[in-house]
Length: 295
View 1 (cartoon, rainbow, N blue to C red):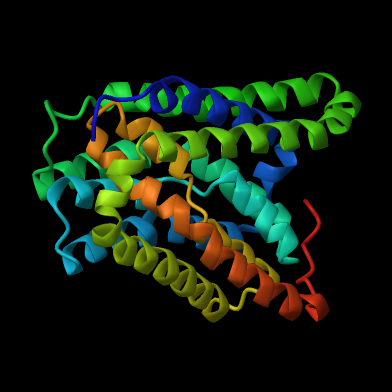
View 2: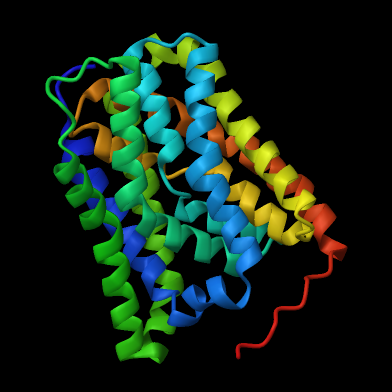
């Protein structure tokens, strides 16, 4: 890949911070309390996100014998948290949106640890061509700045004036989503030649990761006796990774690490959209498991 672009280094992190801030506007401490009140769905979903997904990425990179840089980039993608657009698709699929939002928020916080750790493991395992050793502190700081900080600001604004935040939330989400999509398209267009040059090598690997993660997480959730609405939310979190975060972090280490996320972004909405359509019909008559009252 050529020199790191303005899109990936400046505009994409800003857009990502904006959309994380709007997620914060929709969150209250009660969403995090759900981990205690209704832990099974959250723990199973987060387990899939922080363990199943990156391990699948490692296995798929080995299976397809990806070049070292591409393999490490695939693991970086697999270790990235669920994206906020997963919340929207979960809602459209009549899934458990509250569970989806909770998983996105908590996995975004956990990303401060999981992303640098799995990125370092992948770079070392595949001997990826990075200029220097991964700057763990730098990656942690970047993840913190574009996820936790704006998420916290959004929650703080909501706590200060809940009514105003609730009124502003729908418009803020639409604006943030539009900006997010525009910037991701900008990154892909900016690096179009590189993405297309590597599309054949990466398309099958990224598609395999996407489908295997969604199918595996949905199956695990159902085996754990979660209802279909909860299982839909968990599968969607695994299908719509925060590829923008992977790109934003990858540019700080080596541009080659961003290519799998760019290719994944062009495919994930097709498979996740098809899954949402199927589950929309199945969840139409589904009954939600009763949520226990807080103690």
